[in-house]
Image 1 (cartoon, rainbow, N blue to C red):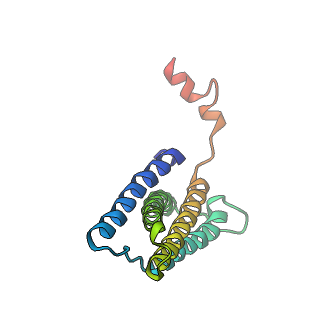
Image 2 (tube, rainbow, N blue to C red):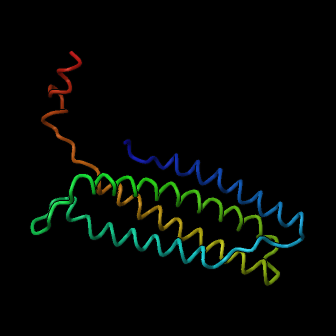
Length: 162
C-alpha cells in the first residue's frame, strides 16, 4: 500500500462537491425547495472522527513499541492502516458532497429551511474534515520505519538491481 496523497483526497472532494452542488440545484430547480440536510449527518461524522482519534491515541504507543505497552499484532496493524485509508477517502467524499450542498443552497440561506440546511451541511463538512485529519494521522502512525541498513545506498535493495 502506498501512503494516501493529499492530491487524491482533494480530487475526490472536488468531484463530490460538484455532485453535491448539482443535487442541490436539481432539487431546488425541480421542486422549488432547498435540499434537506439532517443534523444527524454532522453528528455522525463528528462521532466517527472522535472514535478514530481515540483509536489513534490508544494504538499509537503500541505501534511505536513504547516501553510498557504491548506491541500491536501485525494483522491488527495492517487492518488499522486499511481503516485509516478508507476513512480518509470516505471523509473527503462526504466533505466534498456536503460542501457542494452548502454552496448550492447558499442563495436560499435567507429562508429558515435554507439557513438550517446550510448550517447542517457545513457542520457535516467540518466533521468530515476532522475525520480526514484523524485518518491521516492514524495512517502516518501505522507506517513502518525505514530500514536504512537494508534499503540504503549499497544495501540489499541496491545490490539486487546491480
